[in-house]
Image (cartoon, rainbow, N blue to C red; front, side):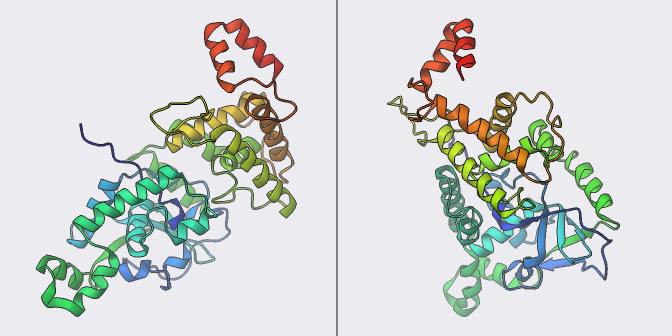
Length: 357
C-alpha cells in the first residue's frame, strides 16, 4: 500500500489583511507576474495579501505541489490567478492562493517550516507540519531541484543535465497570467465566495467560521486552533485583550492537545484530542467552544468589537478543560479517559459527570 502523502502547510507565505477597505482598485493592473515577482525583495510579493476570512492554505499534498512547480518550469498551461487591488494597493488573492504559495515556497525553501513560517507561527511549528515540509522538500529535490540550484545552473552549464539547464533559461520568460476583479471590496468578496464554491467548495465548518469570523466564538476557536499564534483575528482589540486572548488560547491548546500523540499508542498519557486534519480540528474546537458556552447558533452572540466576550468564552473553555485534564484544584482528579469511558458505558453516568463540569 502506498504511503499517504501529508498535506503541506503553506498558510504563512501570503499574509492576511482585513478585506473591508474603502475605495475601488486604482491604476493599471499588470497582466502577468514572473518568478522574480515572488521573491521577498520584489515590488510585488511584499504587498500580496489574502482576505482575512480565507481558509488556511493547507489543502495540497506534497505530490501535487511538486507536480505544479514542475508544470510551471516546463511551460505547461497554468490557470490564471485572480486578484483584486485595493485603494491601498494591496493585491488580494481571490483565487489561486495554493498556486502562488507553492511557487513562493519553492523560491524561499519554506514548505511550512522555513523562516517565513517560523516568524508567522512564532516558532510553534507542529511535528506534523515539519514532517510534511520534509516530505515535499525531499520530493522536490529529487524531481526538480531547489530554486537556488536553478539560480546557479547558468554558471555551470557544462556540468548539469540539459533538461535542468533549459528550465533555468526559461525561468526568465515564464510567468503566471493574472485576471483582475474590477469594483469595490463588496464586489471582490462576492467574487471570492462565488469562485471558491465552484471548483473547490468550502467545507461546511470552514464556511461557518468564515461567516462568523467576527463573532466571539469564531475568534476564540481560531485562537485555540493555533495556540494564540498565526494570523491575529483579534488584532482590532486593545493590546491588553490581545495578550489575554493569546495567553488563554495557549493554555487551552496545551490542555486538550498535549502531550503530542505518537503511534503506536503504548500509554494512557495521551491528549484529549488526537491527530486530526486542520478542518477536523477546527470543527472540534468550534463545537467545544459552543457547547461549553451554551451557544446553539454560531451568530447567537453577534460580533465582538472589544474582545470582552471572546475573553469570557475562553475563560469558560479553560475552566472546563482544567477540570478534565489538569492538576488544578478545581479538577476532579480523574484520568481524562474515565470521563469518556463512562459516557460510552453509561449515558446516565456520562451526563452526571458532565453536570459536575
